[in-house]
Amino acid sequence: MSKIRFVGLDVHAETIAVAVAEAGGGEVRSLGTIPNRPESVRKMIGKLGPVENLKCCYEAGPTGYVLYWQLTQLGATCEVIAPSLVPTKAGDRVKTDRRDAEKLARCYRAAELTAVWVPDEAHEALRDLVRAREAAKQDQLRHRHQLGKFLLRHGKRPTEAGPVWSAKYLNWIKVHVRFEQAALEATLADYLHEVEHAAERIIRLEQCIEEAVAQATPEVRAVMEALQSLRGVAHITAATVVAELGSLARFENPRQRMGYTGLVPREHSSGNRTQRGSITKTGNAHLRRVLVEAAWAYRHRPAVNGRLRRRQKALTLSEETKRIAWKAQQRLHKRYTAMMARGKHKNQVMTALARELLGFLWAIAVQTEAQFKVKKAA
Image 1 (cartoon, helix red, strand yellow):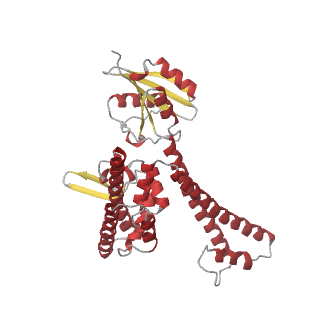
Image 2 (cartoon, rainbow, N blue to C red):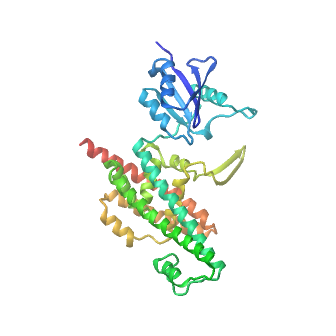
Image 3 (cartoon, rainbow, N blue to C red):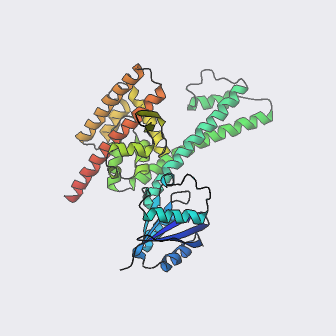
C-alpha cells in the first residue's frame, strides 16, 4: 500500500515552490520551483505518484483559491492554510520560498496547521460582488469628503439646501455655486461628477447583488431571508454575512464565530495575572464592519415597526425565527443601557453588541438550515 505524501506549496503569482514530506517521518525534500500555470501543476501532480495518496496545502493569499479548485479537480486532497497560524521558530531569520514550502509540508504532516473555509466558485463570485459594493461605498465617502471640504475652503455653505448629500443639496450646488476662475469651475465639475458616479455605481451593484441572490440555492436564500428578521440586518447586510461565512452551521457554537470575526478581546495571562485588552481583529474585517453597523440599531428601545415591520411581513419567516429576533432586541438593548450607565465609550459598547449579535445570527441560521434539511428530506 502506497504511503501518504504531504505536499507543501509556496504559491506566488508566477511561481510555486514545491516540497514533499513522506508519511511516518523522514527528511522533507524540496522539489524545486514550477511556473504557476495549470499545465505545470498538472504535470507536477502526475510525477508525485497516485493522486489519491497526495495531501497538498498552501497558504491563503492574493492568488485566491484557483490552485485549490484545480488540485481538487485533479483528485488530490488540498487545504488552504491560515498564514497567521503557521508555527514559526523565534530564532529563524532566513526566509525563502524553498524553506517556506518545506515548513508547510513538515507542519502539515505533523497536523500543526489550521485550514480556512474555502467557498465554491459560485459563492466566491457572490462574495466578490458584495465586496465590490463595499469598495464603492468607501469611494463614495471619499468623493463626498473631497467635495465638501472643497466647498468649505471657498466659503460656499448651503442655505436651505436640505439634508447633506440629498438630491436637493446636490441641486443647490449645481445652481448656486459659481466661481470666477475656470480652474475652480473645472474642479467643482469633476468632484460633482465623481459623487454622482459613485451613487450610480452603488445602485448598479446593489441590483446585481439582488440578481445574484435570486440565482442562489434555495437554502442560501432561506437563510438570507431569516437573517433579515433581525433589527439592523437588511438585504445587503444579510448577503454580506452569508457571502463571507458560507454555511453558518459549520461553526459548532457562537464563540467560534466570534473568534472568526476578531471581535473577542486580546488576553495575556500568566500565573495569577489575567490581562485583557482591545479586540484581536484577527478575523474577517468585512464581516466585522457590517456587524458593528448593525449593532447601532439596538440602542433604540425594542420595537417591531417601520422598515423592520414591513420586512418581516414581506418575508416568509417562522415563528421561531421571529422569537429569536425579538429576544435579540430585548437582550442587546438591555446590554446597551447597562454598559452606557457604567460609562463605557459608545464604540466599545457597539463592539460588544456586535459580538453578541453574532450569536443570534448563528442561532437563526442554524435553525433555518435545519428546517430546510427536514423539508428537503420529506
